[in-house]
Structure formats: structure tokens, C-alpha cells
Amino acid sequence: MEQSIRFCTAPDGIRIAYATVGEGYPLVVCQGWISHLELDWAAEHSRRFWEALGERHLVVRYDRRGTGLSDRKVEDYSLEAQVGDLAAVITALGRPKIALLGFSAGGPIILAYAHQNPEVVSHLILYATYARGRYLAISDLAKALMHLIDADWGGLGSLAQADIYIPGASTEVRKAFAEYQQQSADKEAALGQSAAFARFDTKHLLKEIHTPALVMHKRGDRPVPFELGRRLARDLPNSRFMPLEGDVHVLTLGSAKVVIDAITEFLAGGSVGEPVPTRATSAAGIITRREKDVLRLVAAGRSNRQIAEELSISINTADRHVSNILAKIGASNRAEAASFAVRTGIA
Image (cartoon, rainbow, N blue to C red):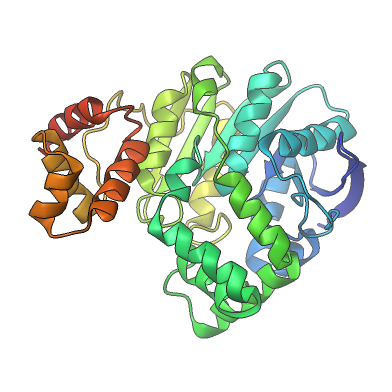
């Protein structure tokens, strides 16, 4: 197989590069934060993945604005703008119905599009993704990565991404992955996309999206914790959840065959995955050990100043921990956080 690359124009005039391969019912893919259609096709693991799906489907991938072969000079990375990019690609295809696959930062984009265009989307496949980006933005890891990208995108910034996305990889693989990222986007685009997906928020839309959905997530995923995937599946009315083993975040690496088989079966009408519990039973994977200590004290009725004194931390640190906890568990106030602590066995 060979991919065919074309271009279309987003509503704001940005040129978007998209590639097609295979035949059959169309599966449109919204990739992660940065990509490069030509480099992806040159990488054996990536090409094999898309070729396998292309045996039964017309697979359509595109480079996000500011990255790859799409226009690089971009100022607007908002969710609305990126939904417009996806819409432009789908319009260019000229097909009345399509399936959507979104992974990592691509998830909120396909969710927003499906909410706006339910008559167009037949299936949703969501891999290692989330509904609300603020859960990722508040983490110390995310903040550190943003600083590294800003300070040294051509070195430590992209290498650090490799360590997180493909943990345990060899030095050669890490360097290759870092070079791929550097060629796919410059520092400004990397920062622009990172800042944008931290603001993505589709959680309020989920209950209105009734498209059949398959949510897949690895238990050891570091960039997007497993609990966020489980929550996403829980909040989509017509979804099933497929937990995966491993810690590699990249879609085309790790459990590639399992993922390909699941996608193929799901699009063929098969029952893939499992029903989703309606309520979380554990905060593991999203609440850190220190945050659990803080949450116990919140549940005990302690003020932030009292928490700081009992844990021998500064009041600013206590304030930050409480703010992070509320955001991570989706609580509006301390009472809801206390209820969560009791319900999940933390307190």
C-alpha cells in the first residue's frame, strides 16, 4: 500500500494536509499533539499499523495545524479551530458517514465534532485520551515538561517527551522519537498545542453524545492516567471500556495487534470491551500519595493552614494541593472532596 497526500482548507484559511490509504468504510484519525504524515509512513511500526487497518477501511490521517505538512504559521490552536480542521478533512472526503478515531490530545476534538455532527459519525474510538484537559495541565509533570519544551525543545524538551511516551525505550529509539518530534513541529507549535489541549473541555458534552464508542486505555499510561480513560467511558452513554496492559502511550507501539483487532471488530459491529462501572472505586492513577494525605485531612475538616502545619509544608503548597485535588476529582468544593474521600476509601 501507498498513502496519498492531499490538502484542504480549514474555515480560518489554514491549509491542512491529510493522507488516505486502503479501501472501505472511512475511518478518520485525529492524531496526538504533533505528527508528520511522511515521517509516520516512513516508520515501520507506524506504517504497518495503518496498513493493517487499511485492509478493511479507508484510513484517513491528517497533520494537526502547526505540525507536519500542514501550515506551520498558526496563532489559533483552540478547540474550535481544531474541530474546524477535522470538519474540513471530512468535507473533503465527501462521504456521508464516517467513523472517528482520536488518541491522546485528539480525543476532545473528535468528541466535540461528534456532538456537533451526530448524523455524520457512526462510531467513536478513543484511545489514551480524556474529556477535560485541565486534569493534565495541573500536574507537576505537565508544568515541568512545558518548561523543558520552552527552554530546550531541540534537546531535553523532546527527549523528556520520549521518556514519558515510550518509557523503557533504548537510547536509539528515544533519540529517533525526539528527532521525529523536532521535525514535526517547532518550539512555538509544540508550546501552542500543549497550552491549547490543556484548555480542551468536552466533559459537559458527553451525556449528549450517543454515538457508539469504544474507549481503550493502558493501565500504566503516564501522560494520560488510566482513571481519566475510565471516567470518559463512564460518562459516554453508549460506550464500552477496554483496559489494556502496558505503559507505552503511543498508539502504534506496544499492544498494536490487540488495538487493531479491537478497532476492526468494533467497526464490524462486534461487542468489544466491557461495561463501565458507574462510579469510581479507587483514586489510584490520578491522586498522588501526598494528595491522599491532604485529602484525608480535608475530609477531617482541617483548613489549609492546619493541613500545612500537620504535614510540615508551606501554606502555599497546601493551597496548591487542595486546588489540584478538587480539579482532578471534579469536585466543586471541600464537601464534595470529603465525600469522594469517604466513597473511595481514602478517608
